[in-house]
Each structure stands twice: as C-alpha cells, then as structure tokens.
Length: 535
Image (cartoon, rainbow, N blue to C red; front, side, top):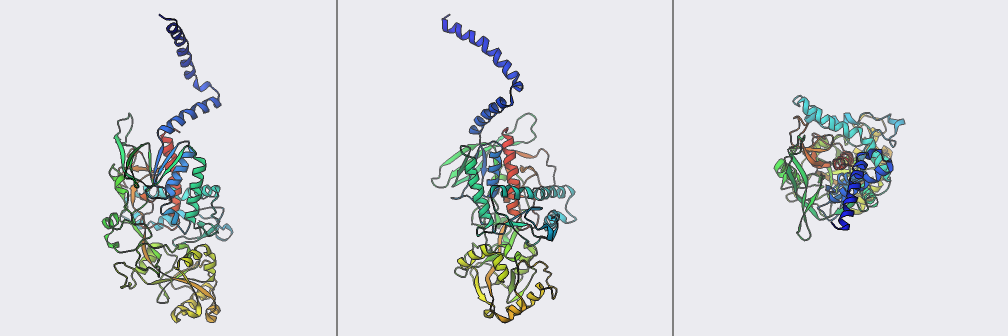
C-alpha cells in the first residue's frame, strides 16, 4: 500500500465521523451558519429548476415577483414580442377596500365589496339551482379576492405606483377603483413599474423570454408516496416564434396566459357562437385553455363572456374589429350614454346590464360583417377634467371630439338640460342613477351653449372571459368540476392566475377586478410555486 493511499484512508476515517456529527447536530449551529448553508443549497436548486411563469401580463408579473421574493428564480415566458398582455391596456383602475385612499369621511369604511362582487356574479352563484358545494367554492374565491384587495393596493403603493384617485364604477355601491392622477393609464403604470422592479431585484434570478409560445406541459405519472394527485407537471415545451426552434424547460409552472375574447374563430366560436361578428378589445390570438385541459384540468363558465358596453368606433376606420376601450371610468366620472340624443340606461349599472340595454337598440347596417351600434359617450367639462389623462389620449387618437353645446342637436341639448337638473337635485333620475362623478354642467350652461363637451361614438365589444380552469384559493389548477370535492384533486406542480382561471366572477366581472385578481392570485401562485420548490 502506497503512502498516498494510507494517508487517504486515514483522512477518511477522521472526516466521515466528523461529517456525520456535524450534520446530525446541524440544528445546533448558529442561525447565521444555517442561513448561509440553506441559502447556498437553495441557490443551487434554483439554478437547476426555476419557477416557470407562462404569460407576462399582470398576473404573470405578480407571480414572478412573489416567487423571487420567496427565494426562487423565475423564467418568464411570453408569446408576444413585448410583455404586458391585455393588462397594460387596462384603463379604469384596480379595486381595493378598505384602503387609505378612499374617502372615509364621505362614504364611511367600505364594507360592501364582497356583497357587490357576489351580486355581480349573478345566477351562477345566487340562483336556487346552485349546489351548496359549488356556492361555497365560489364564495371562498370571492373572499380571498376581496379580503386581500387592501393588501394588493398596499403592495403596489409600496412599489411606487400612484393609486391616489378613486372612482366609482358600474355595479359598485361606492368608489373603490384606484388609479393614478397622471396621464399614464393604471394598467400601464402598474405593469411597467412591476417589470422594472423585477429586473432590479431579480438580477441573476429573473429572465424574461419573449416570442416564446408554450405548446404543451411536460408531465409524469405521480407515484410519490402519500400524493393524491395523479398527474405531476414537470415543465413546459415552448417554441421560439422567431426561428421556430423548440425548447424544453423544467420546473413548476404558473399559467397566466389570459382569456379568449380575441379568439374569435376558435374558443369564442366554440362556446359563444352567438357573439360572432362583435369587435373586441383583445388581439386576435388563440386561447391557451386546451394546454391545461390536455393534462386533466377542468374548465368552468366557458360560455360566460363579458361584453363591455363601450369600445370606441374610430371615425377613421370604423370597420376595424380591434377597438380601443372607452374606459368605464369615463362614465364613473360623470359620462353619459346617448342614442339619438336620449339616455337609455343608468350608466353605472353592471357591464352586463348596460351592454344588454345597448344591444337591443337598432344596429348599424352599413359596416361590413361587424355588428356595431350607434351610441354616443358624452362627458361634460367636469368629467373631462376628472379624466384628463385618458381624455387627452382619446382626443389625440381622434376617438373623442370637443364640441360646443350650441353645436349639438336639439334632442341632445334637451337631455343635457334634464340631466343637469337631476345632478343638481331638482328631480330624480328616471333611470335610477344616483352617483354623478364630477359632472358640473348646469341648466344655465346648457342654455348659453358656450361650454365644450367631449363626445365620441361607442359600441358593445367582447372584452373579458369569466370562464377558465377550475382552481382553488391556493391558485392550484384542479382536475374536478366546480362543485365536486377538491381535496387532493390538484395537478401537482401547476398553478394559475388571472383570466385563464374560472369560477371567481360568475356571470359578470366587476370593473376594476381584473387587475385585482391578477395581483391577488398571481402573488399567491408565485409564493406557492416557490414553496413547492422548498423555499
């Protein structure tokens, strides 16, 4: 036996028992040592298996931020050339209650958000035919959404997002929809701020990959001892849309790919063929729901498609099927809707009710295959100033025009005189509107005719899909129908957040709750995925 072999054996006889003692007494070491050791082990695991987030809208960004905060690394895959999705277009704001920005002196502490959300959910939650289990599951989702809404606002406020302006939208019993006071719409403000923070805090642990279209989820049969889930997601396959190359990426998956309102000839045609021909606020792209159902996920409420009552009809291209949203905030701040000069509905009803009221009106018949209506949105000087950031953009795009009251037709001027009297408290509104935003036009102003109003043509459009994958309060995607026992029916390694999920909103989503669900359930999904990795 050589000298080197003898030395090696001697060292092993000493080091092995010492190592055993060290690890046996790991808990006895100082917290600093344990933290460093754990950090090094976690860092190694992170490099090997990142949390994979699919979709770079607000839900995906929120999930990414939460996962990184929890210690994981993140690979964010976005099929478009730029991040933001439809979230970056959101223009009305994000709900939250109670928050420090709400006017407690005027309205009291906001305790009605849950009730408003449950009422808006309609028959899918409230009808006698809804089973007790399904009702309980829907109510639990609503509870998480509303109870964590204050925290969502605080989270964004802490990142530096301005949310100091609070408006009342349709279906809400008081103002709770937050946005900033500047010219940047709330969706863009939130998305760009969060993306910037991710790049700052995630150096070495965050990577955004654009033009990356996920084509399938990687799975394996779950044979782990004690596991009730039969399927385990282990990663994704995605295609580079630029060069067509295919890649495999391994790790737990958070799915945040959005809805299917723009999938006109695909999922929308399958579940709501009656909506064929309606323009949309969403880009025309296929929904990703089948990727989830291919691994056993159940879908719910897929026929529940929200028609937003007000998408701008661009005078320069009225037949363009892709419309700019006329933000609900415009009505919340005082705007009114007119058909041939007359109001037809309380503008602060739910989106469903306002849309239905407009869609029974005679349609325009001379605009190709599009189904459009001839409705006008009018803002007085007070509403125009309150929504200045939005209005400036719409004026620049030619979607709104300024006109003196004297230039309007007699039917419109008569409506303005009547409405001004309602706002002044001289008469009740026959349509039931009781909140008037910042409307300040008086009957005398209308008679003089010198004040300017902003006016533009709008039409109902497909906007949001309430249906999606069945999920639970931990944002886990499930393999059972809503209303069935959910315990142990989650797909291991898979979470979802945002418009890709279903069961939360029921028949109708309250304005301002889409951004909210992205933040609330996105943060939950990211945290759960990181926890799954052992952080």
